[in-house]
Structures are given as C-alpha cells and as structure tokens.
Length: 403
Image 1: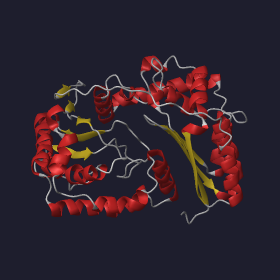
Image 2 (image 1 turned 45 degrees about the vertical axis):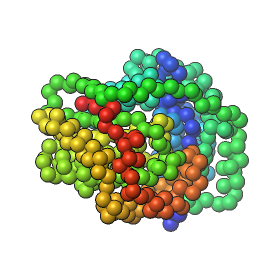
Image 3 (image 1 turned 120 degrees about the horizontal axis):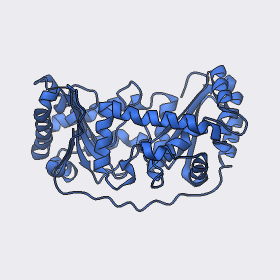
C-alpha cells in the first residue's frame, strides 16, 4: 500500500496483562519492555543507537489480552534493521543489569496513572467493573507487585507465551519476495506451543454502584459510567451498537447526543462521549487504536465537568442513554450515523501499517472478511426494535458510576 520505500513489521502475542500470575501483576509489561533492553547480539545502547542510525522504529505496547510489537524501516536499511528486530524477538537476553532501571520506569508509569485524573478514573472504573478478574489491575501492575519482578520472571513469561501457536506475524510495504520468504521461515522458528484459555468467572452485580475517588484541590471531575456487555466484535449485533453509539457519543465529535446536551446546550462539561467497547485513542488522532481486545467487553460513557456540575452531568448522561433505550433512534438519524461510520472507516486503513494491523485484528477475531464486509454489515443495521436490542446490554439499571 505504501508509495514509499518503507517496510512495516508487526507481531501480536495473544497474551497480555490478563496473563500476569497472581502476585506478579505487571509481568507482561515488564517482559515486553525488557525485550528492548538487550538481546544475544545487542545491548540496550547498541539497539537504541542502531535504530537511530538508520531511522528505524520499534514499539512494544501491552494490552489486557495482547502484546503488540510494531516497527518500520526504509527498505535500503532493511538488513540492518531486521538483524536487530529478529534478535530481540528470538534471542532476548533479559539482562539483569537493566532490571533496576526498568523497575524505576515501571514505577513511574504506575505513578503517572495516579497523576492523570482521566486515566485514574478509567483504571478505577475497570478495577471495580472487573473485580476479581485479571482485567482489574492496570497493565503496568501495582507498585507492590512490580517491585519484586525479576529477569527470571520475564524469562518464564517469554518461554510460555512467545510461542508459535500464540503469535500472529505480519509484513507490509515494499519488500522483496526473497525477504518475505526469509521472514516466514524465521517466524516459524518460534518454538511450538499454545496457551490454553483461562476459565475466568466474573460477577455481574444487578444494581447500580457508585465509586468516589477523592483527590483534593480539584476543580474538575472525571466521570466514567458503564457496564459489562454480552457482545464483542465477533458478533453481528456489534454493528447495531456501533451505529447507536455514534448517535449517542462518538469520540471527540460534537454531534453526539451526550456532547450536544451536556456541552453545547448547557456548558456543563468540556466534552461527553460514549464507547460501545474498550477504546484507546491512537496517538493524537480521533481513531481507535487497533488490537485492544477485551472479553467480556464493556460499554461506557465519559465526561469531565467542572466539579460543581458533577451531579447534574451524571443525571444528564443517564437521561440521554435512557431516552435511546426508551424511544430508539429515528430511522433517518440512524442512517446518517451509519453513513458517518462508513465514510470514516477508510481513515482507519489508509496507511500500510494501519491496514496491516487491521488485517491482523481480523485474524485475532477470526473475521477474515471484516474489512471487506464492514459497509454491508453496517448498512444492514435496522431501526426496528433497536431500543429493545440496546436495552439488553445498555440498560442503566445496573450501571457503574465512577467519579
């Protein structure tokens, strides 16, 4: 897809922070970040300088269910780049002398959650929503658990999870057939293995709950409201919830009912949005970051009013949700927001890297035709009985409110 002489790499390990052992919360994050700190042939300085010299990029991020490794380089520097990339993947050294520095970075990452009110509110929301479930703890872990992680812990996590049956690998851009063959052969060198699915039981309280996180001296509140749902992207009904959510509160857009009611008409908050599934913003764009799966998923609403407007903002958000559940969505309005998603979708796959990650997402969800059939599936969304459909998963009777 790229018109430029660039090669993109991506690797998805189908294990994330939800695979952290009890008492070692943050191990997936620790292991993934230790990969870049030393391999069999390169130490941290050589990795950093080697990538900088050729203008190469290598990023590793950890989600609840996956570890996503991405990279890119100019085609002319492909051999030099791939030597570093492949050594990090296949021959990690997990250097003990880097552990102390990484612990400091991990501690800082955890403290940054507390400092950022929006992130703290979201993590508190997930902590309460998924109580007793592996999603409850932050990807970075807790200060107490992260402090005890060792290089040996990382080695064990790598050995168990970085295996052929637990990985998805991909290339995009301008590369030769010879390199493609080499890449496939190398990826097949991963040791064979698979990671069995854990039996995870999650309690779903049948009543409304409220959690207050006190931070003195704040003039602004952060509010998350939501609940667990019974659909994921694998389900055809997901498209109905996507269309309805666009009407209710599309991220960083001013046309949603939440934004219009809370921000535009009353000036209660600086923004108000909703999400039919877990959402992470991709960089500075409005787009969702690919490959951030949750199962079970959750629906949520987010607003951040002046402190004095907190209670009224909560009431208005709940009111707008209840209005949709009670009266549905006008057919013309629904079609307008279906069209918005259809017209917006090409922006999610306009670069080679975006397309690569989206196609890997298809593999992860076992939806080989997701991109091809996205428009048709959205067009099939019907306004008939939509309020009943939405009420099955978005009823506000047992919603969780975190402030």
